Figure (cartoon, rainbow, N blue to C red):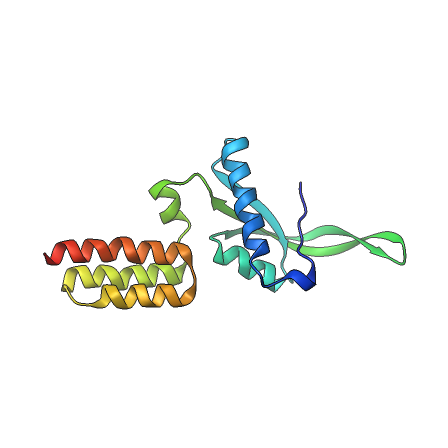
Length: 153
């Protein structure tokens, strides 16, 4: 396995997101796999939230996991609760749908309602998606927004 971390002084600058994108590309292109799987310490809330925003979903937890730590120059083994998270990185519509988060589904439902009702909800969904900074959500909102525009013509 590979362990990755971002120096605390360089956090909140998009480095972890870029690192994960490169890792996912490696899994897809070099290893020929559609699934990326990772383990994260359940108490590491910032990392867990990042992975969830990137489309990873929890699969199972291991409350009996061990991690290595260095204290005063000595390597020790500590107990940790690990979460296994998975994401389909194969690309295409199936992966896009499989990786949706509930917020994305809610926004997509609003856009679909706009198609059915032929109202201006599509532009509102794009505004909402843009404000979240979620690229997947924004792409979905734009795609369905285009369908709305075409159906109004």
